[in-house]
Length: 273
Ligand SMILES: NC(=O)c1ccc[n+]([C@@H]2O[C@H](COP(=O)([O-])OP(=O)(O)OC[C@H]3O[C@@H](n4cnc5c(N)ncnc54)[C@H](O)[C@@H]3O)[C@@H](O)[C@H]2O)c1
Image (cartoon, rainbow, N blue to C red; front, side, top):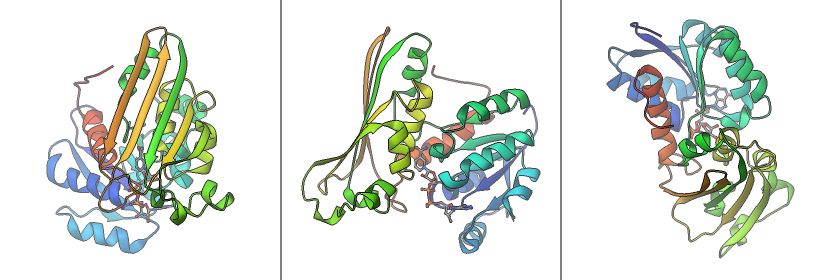
């Protein structure tokens, strides 16, 4: 990606996608332009297009991949694995926000990226400390744990909640709602726990990474705490996230992380880890 304007294609025109599109529209003048957008909800794509100065084409995902140098997925874990695979097969770089959708087949996708000599970026989203976890993973990590605190409503519709018939409106105080591996958390809360996927992939994998989800109607922030122990010592981080006003499931830091990942992809300077 040297000395040319990068053509960006965006799948998903919701909270994160719109923020990325607006950032590219305003701030990436000589480095990137948004050439194509795609969304299963045609209204959302059209609404976003109207707000942009430089109008991208609204196209189906395959066409979007074909016409882009860098594909950004900000849609759903249901399609993120496919988007990554298709983009890499066409030798395009790809940023995946719905990290939960790539965890299961991450080894195959990472190999594909290496073979194609393309980049696959998995942003840290709403957690802090992945820089340290990545460094720690060069040596031995003995333990990696994530504790997530959210309002009960943020988990509405999650398969774990539905399967266990949990009435979220009846929860009046702090309650541990889930305790298990990151692999189980991803299956039970595919829209809520992308951070556990990023932590797993940076560290010791989704089976060995432990996740605890605590809910309370009194929480005003999405809080993620990481505790990792290894031969390096121990690291603990706590991130108190303001939820996005447009989507309470998504933290504002995740939106900023997506924009920063794109900036880093275009910038030769790398800071951290
Ligand atoms: N990595 C992280 O830390 C992190 C943090 C927050 C959200 N996320 C994930 O990023 C994704 C986007 O989040 P958001 O807050 O922008 O969500 P959102 O609901 O605001 O927007 C998602 C958009 O994608 C579209 N979409 C859904 N399924 C699609 C499909 N199959 N094909 C095309 N378009 C589709 C929707 O119509 C919507 O416009 C979600 O999967 C979310 O779980 C990741």
